[in-house]
Amino acid sequence: MYSLNYQVTTSTCDSEGKLKLYSALQMMQDCSEMWIDSEPGVKQYFTEQNMAQLLATRQVEVIRVPDYKEKLTVTTSVYGMKPMFGFRNTFIYDSEGKPCYRTWSMGAFVDKTAGKLKRVDDATIASMTLEPQLEMNYKDRRIILPKEDGTVLDPIKVLRADIDYNKHVNNANYVRMAMELLPEGFMVHGLRVEYRVAAKLGDVLIPTIYEIEGGYIISLSVGNDVSTIIEFTE
Image (cartoon, rainbow, N blue to C red; front, side, top):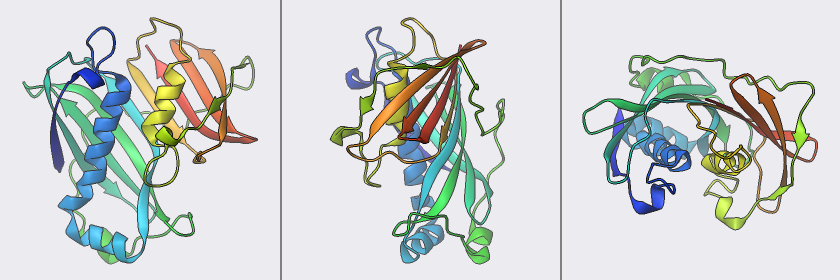
């Protein structure tokens, strides 16, 4: 398990002094990325093989949104490992140790040069420290797009500030873009994201929004390819 301590600061708050979901996702991502430092054998293997783990899907349960100046602890633990995919929980706890956000995610192992899936060898998998799978309401990693009744909205250009060191749109930024398309006042208590095709600098994302029972699904496409699908529920 790996953990980071945070405090809700001005730059991470919305207009009501509450932690932005976008900021919470950044905290989760930072902890997930830093986790590899707790597994030096895995870190060395990924370095030698020129590999990375890219987020493929994430589900978030929002239990309680923290307030300005609250102190938080983010923890990441891996509960499953396959040759080309890893599974982890990332939880955000308040100062009393109660969960504010419960999440699970699946990452895909890729060759950084080829940009394609690459297998991790059995010895490295066997060396991993696996933790118990934490309790939450696990949903399917696949999000099914409705076949009709979607509304196409204005295109969104990918900017330099959207790109991370993997040279594509940072996973939290897709959610940030999509949240701007939700009706004002919509409170997100559940989130699922399926990442399909990475968007890059200069790409134009075409959003399509679908109203579903209890929420919305937004797809972000580059040309004919769906880049990311995001489900927001109350």
